[in-house]
Image (cartoon, rainbow, N blue to C red):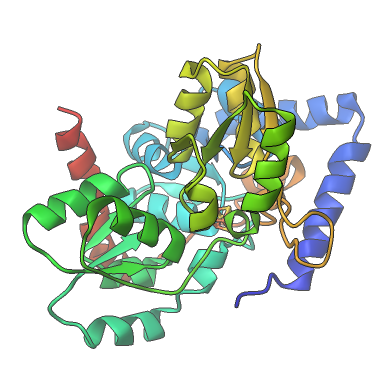
Length: 346
Ligand code: SF4
């Protein structure tokens, strides 16, 4: 089992406290500093849906992007800026560096990791793959560059089902890593022959079917939107299961006026923007008791702060580096992913 280290929780707490205490003026001043530095540094802000609202707002106001990890990769790859400021977690910065080695990739912090990445060390994962040389290795984007370099395919949750179906059509047997819940969901949907790595997301794993059913009794007309990194018991009772982008689309398109959402609450920023007339409720987690380690918000995404962005842009600190040989090997499955989505969309 993976435990979030205490230091990260302390940092998260400090970050939240600090944002809460900031006066509107100081927030506006920091935003103005980031805007000025983005121009000075020929940089663009690429932010994930789970980052704090103020970061998403800033990305939109400066011509950057707010999206899922697949779109972040594509946007950074295609944008003309010479520097990408990636607000998210480390694997997103690494992916940007691998796909655009000629660009400078900065992050507000290099401390922001992911429980899926931590729970899939390359040595152990490689040994697992070596035991099954006849299987195609498919890994989730939430992995280190080294794990990607060991894989045949990289996928995000938005295309995982399509890629696995494609591989099944070619009669390929798979190794899937690292998220066991997403893997089980795909296996159940496709019937694919998949050997699973035993990883999980500490945020999604906290959602509880019982709590959600209790909430549905209070809001009987609410639809339940679930990210497939959640446990099977939660996925089973969902009205819609999908990636972040797919859930945002569903929030807009469903007729329900109330939506219960089982993913990181950072997504509410976009959902409210797309469907301002609707009510969004966080799916219950373990609550504030002993079992809740994330309470529907990723502690690493919360490390993305305005001050850190100013420092990174001003000083060139927190630059992401990926060793060239590793990057070259990791590029292959990443390009396969991007090519697959281009071909699939035509
Ligand atoms: S929400 Fe989960 S999967 Fe996403 S970065 Fe945080 S720990 Fe990783």
